Image 1 (tube, one colour):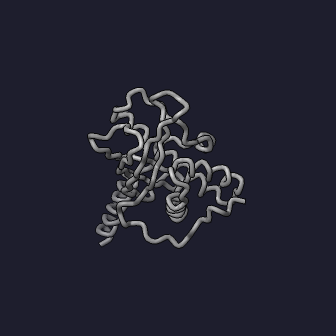
Image 2: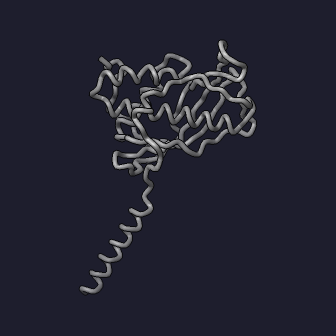
Image 3: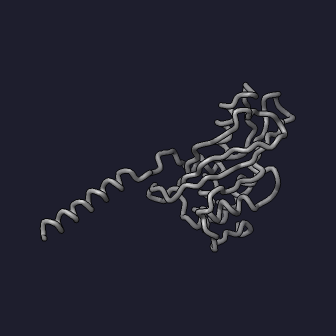
Length: 200
């Protein structure tokens, strides 16, 4: 009887160790001092029809939005920091609409997100850098806790538009998101809210 109990305990420990070993953790770079400098600046791409360029820029812009949002929620008691970060977040959207930002902030606040990774971007094969037309990208966002362990992953969709930068060269433009949406329903309604107005 004792041997059977010991075997069960040993088997349980082996399974626990195996589960911990395979647990996904954050492996990326995260420097708050760098994140604080993010702005939706003009982008220069030599090949306007390059799918690889679209993929790279889209991932970069999504990463910047989510990292700024994470920094914003982690500094909820620092009104000066939030006051600085909010306009930076707003600059990534074409319209002055706080709904998208509010949704991201509520989601991150509810899940206590510290680190973020963007992956699995899906662009159509005909996607290019045509200006002034709304484009769509599906992607996965992974949320990680303070100890860099995976909290959850969500399938998302973003719509974006490219606007020509009139003051610069022909291959320069500004990349704006028009909206971000969650494709899976695994996030429950969030009761906690973050008021964007409370930045004083």
